[in-house]
Length: 108
Image (cartoon, rainbow, N blue to C red; front, side):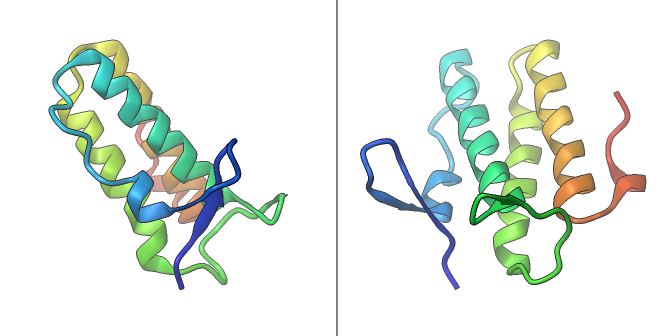
């Protein structure tokens, strides 16, 4: 099962393409683009058919794992503490809302 979304132009974009590595995330602008991709991937998994659906039930676990791995990479490559904090925030949202692992959500 491939999860897809429509962009503003109406084209369908596979989730794995949206979460593919961004070249040289050490550059702040590219890192920011990576965060936008993470936010979009997260939103695709938590809002299914326009409805908020927390937790992993009924979702493809491989697809759910993609935003978590991508977010960890962003966190590890953050060029400053503010951006690292944004990545940690999304890792917490992913742990809590996608995997129902509130106890594993990073503390802020």
